[in-house]
Length: 187
Image 1: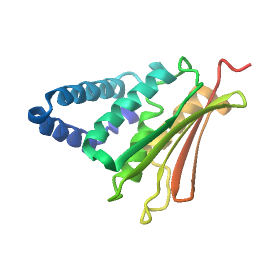
Image 2: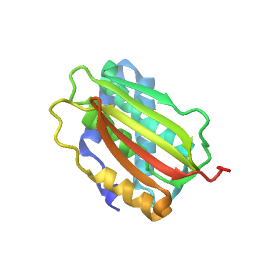
Image 3: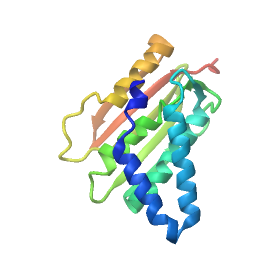
Image 4: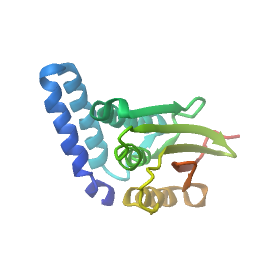
């Protein structure tokens, strides 16, 4: 319920303004953006108990990034390293997209030059780790536990107990979030 209530109004308004700007100059891009926005809201307004897969979560994250790419243009760069991950790995819905949204909102948007959001994944010690990092603006407030991170952390604890975790670090001018989930396919 908390996640559903926290849809960031600025994201909705910015997305709708992007669609309005695209309607006349690139109707196909406007239509894709509306479809992406529809899928994001379908996921956000669906049941929190709904399960998803890693592949579905990454696809939803890509839809979000496609919308923000239209708005931020060259200011938003994305690097992905997700080879050899179990895309069928089950997980609660909306674990990754809110973390990527935070990376864009707090790490890219405040920077005039923008920056790179990195999404990396690996298998390690019977777990799947998804790492999301972004630039840390020089004038950024002290790192804190935001609502999205707290919500994701609680959901991981509820579904996985001590076998799952969400960790954050800062260093070298970057803010990093690591989601660790048990790898059902690990030997």
